[in-house]
Amino acid sequence: MNDALRQITEGQFQAYSKLPWLMLVVFAVPLAIAAWRFRTYPTRLWIAVLTVALIGSVWTVFSPDGFIWVAALDWLLLIVATVDFLSIYLATNRGIDATRDIARSCSLGVPVESHLTIENRSGITLVGHVRDDLPDEFQSKPDQHTLRLPPRGRVSFRRKLTPGRRGAFRLQHVSLRFFSPLRLWHRYIQIPLESELNVYPNMKQLSDYALLARTNRLSLIGVRRTRRIGQDSDFERLRDYSRDDNFRHIDWRSTARRNKLTVRQFQSDQSQRVIFLLDCGRMMTNTRDGYTLLDHAMNAALMMAYVALHQGDSVGMLCFSDSVHAYIPPHGGKSQMNRLIHACFDQFPRMVESRYDQAFLYLRNHCKRRSLVVLATNIIDEVNAAAVTDYLGNINGQHLPMGVILRDRTLYDAADHPDGDEMNLYRAAAAADILIWRDQVLKDLEHRGVLMVDTFPDELTAPLVNQYLEIKAKHLL
Image (cartoon, rainbow, N blue to C red; front, side, top):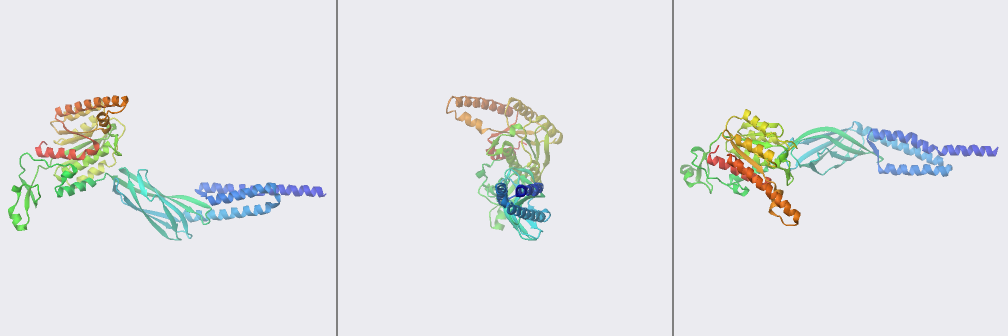
């Protein structure tokens, strides 16, 4: 009889010893599924507590006498974890709102401020972190913010975003991570919050040019004063005398009246047209100082456009690769500069063959008046060199063609510094051969009446503006 009771008691103990394991499986598995479904994950504290519970359950296998205490502890842990889970889920499910205040446009490399406001409509204090959506091309200071939201309160954050690439970007959401009251769980949520941000080329060079032009110090950025052939006779305005003005233009009556030297300024030929053709194909994909050849060409073209508009000319632009991407008809006025910037800010070089035939056909159909046609491209092989030579040379007569051909500094460095081992000598010889061929292509273009600007990408702005001012001075257009 005693043996039978002892066997029954041992069987009960063995069954009861499995109870903590069954409890962990029955309650922990649904809790884990719910956590995965609602993006609520255990913290290190909860993992440590579960580890202790697991050790206690293993201990009951070897010592069944303690299963009651282990079972009670497991029940308590599961109840506490469930309540903690429900509290963070219910508080953050529909009780969080976010708003973002950011400018619609900014300049490349110039920090822009972003204001983010998080509102808590629940009745508990929420602690965690907030991270705003950020494109890969942006840098942020700081990257994320520590968040402590009082009950039915709001918190605002401010950070600076520095764009590393121009173009159109879309901020789509705000990422939040909240800790439960007992720090057993942390929940991730994303609040949809769309904002559009257009990053334009940095136009600081335009303001620098305007400042230096007012003080007659354009030589500091490489722009030289060009002596005009003949004399412009149309009076434009009176202005203060500067050191480089011709003393014969001094208006003595105005000088006496103002008690300050005053000169007469004459206007040059206006209402002439300038059209830029920006090649966005594979020839412009090389990089220099972190910018593509298209970026350098675009910055220089916008600078020349600013100068031309200031001179009273009309400026247009055509962007193309294997097709025509954008076309801005030539117009004058201050608003035209904004149209040009908006048309080209999201144009990027593509790994496709440029179709010069489509670009020049589009130009012929949409621009019949004589214009200065500026093609910014690169010469890599005989195929695209022949296309550039033919199409630029064929429009001479109807238009005044100008070719902006960008140099490869790596190629010039290899040819200028052949020092080193035998491989460097072979590389220098190959580079020299390419440069000789390239020079012959440029000479062929000049023989066909094409004006040339041949320089390195990072030094393009000043030579391009100087060439335009020389054209105006010689009345070539």
